[in-house]
Amino acid sequence: RYLSVKTVIGHGFFTEYKDGISGIPMKFVDYIVYPDKERTEFIGGGQRLIQTNDRDHGWIFDAAARTLKDQNTTQLEDFRLAMRTSVENLLRGWWRAQGAKLSYVGRREAGVGRRNETVKLAYPDGFWIEYEFAAGEGLPAKVIYERKHKKPDSDEMEELTEEDRLLKPVTIDGVVTPYVIDHFRNGIQTSRINYESVELNKTIADSLFAKPASLKAVK
Image (tube, rainbow, N blue to C red; front, side, top):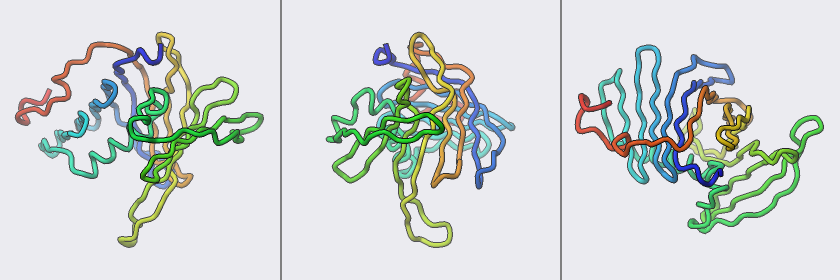
């Protein structure tokens, strides 16, 4: 049933954290067509921001700044990384086409009386991702990887540990999906995604992902 899911429409709130402290939640609508199309609309405080990706292309609409731009190299790389580190990449087997190798790491502590089973995807370019699954329920619990970031006080780059914690599992049409995803960088929370509703296999028009001809054409 999980592998039969072709599209996902999610409504909820996205919250950024600074130094571990929560900011103001922003409402979002997310449209996904597997394997590589996504459109996310952020709405709140009089603002509207649309970020859209379709394979190797993408665009961003910012209503406040009145701009409609192609995504830059960094933004496109962020999307590719998000796809690469997603649970879908592991469970749907997309990693095979990129020459990655899957191995069993072992069992880890996951709180009092709880343990997670851990597997690792290793790519030919040296990048790796660890996925932890709750030993009892078998549900995805954590995604861990490392990413280079520029140091705040210099141009030097440093490797930081990135971690997604998948919480509040909800069953929709027989498919279990996390309604809360907390992201941590070096152990400090940087964001939270909190879904209010998720719809599976609803029709999503291709036109949602096409870049509008002008600002006025944005819907």
